[in-house]
Image 1: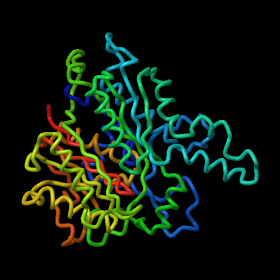
Image 2 (image 1 turned 90 degrees about the vertical axis):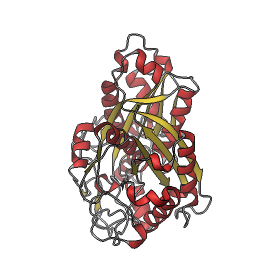
Image 3 (image 1 turned 90 degrees about the horizontal axis):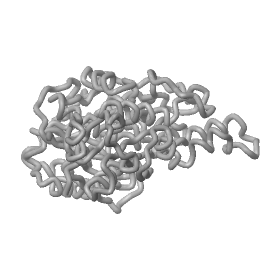
Length: 401
């Protein structure tokens, strides 16, 4: 089967508008959590999130200078394409490039703002800005139009593992030789509906996200996008591309347990990791870094620790395992795409980002979570975990080429 490699990266997060800014801020343990400005939180008990700060909004869909999901996705895609140089390749066949994007809410905030502006209007919710941005499939359609991509495109909505699921679909397309390259990623912002959902579930941290800390109180909702350019190794070599990493394999599973709570013993997460390692023809002993799902909720972090102990056995405390959600929040459908970029950068640079806000050890989460400071370490293989609501689990292994 053809090998699949990563040749371009793009990032938009609460702590940076591109890869250089975001990665630098992660290594410097910067927290992107601030007071929410995109909607009124006076009736809520929680008022903080990781909203975008430096990204210029296209402001072409009536969003009143609020960032849209497509703003994030388009900016990250442009950066990834420029980084890869693929659109400058003379032998490029645009009908052999596909698009695979993950999201949780799509442009839900476009609906929200229209409904709040005109709650009594019969036509409310059906303005041109909504038509151009909803349903979610228009994200990939608009991307194809803007960058003149003529291959297959798809939107995957599978809770907060959507980005990894988009990556897996693209990986299969490339291995089946149906395309030569794929634009893959995830993007989400902070819609009030989504914020309200987690608020009412009592899943939000009041001040900060503290993955694996004994006193963790919940997640912080974040906005952002991560995009990767994937190609077959043969296609990348033919055009002399810069290669960050190889996707070695992936594993998917479902808990079949509960709509919001993870399986208490982490059975679905264990299966996803074991399948990913098996498909990659690797042992748990080969993994040098784990990008944890690490939401900072009491149940998730405890479950993830149990699952990691089951898979990594005697090496669990010797394998660094950090959560960048502590810095950029939980970006939902974008989270695992952003974390895939993080894995590629860790492999390229030999640097592992920290889990910040770590203050008190939890005996039930006794992992090496790279507390508060980045670490230098050679990373040959990295595992990216995403364990979403509803038990939608997706693990991907990246490796050095």
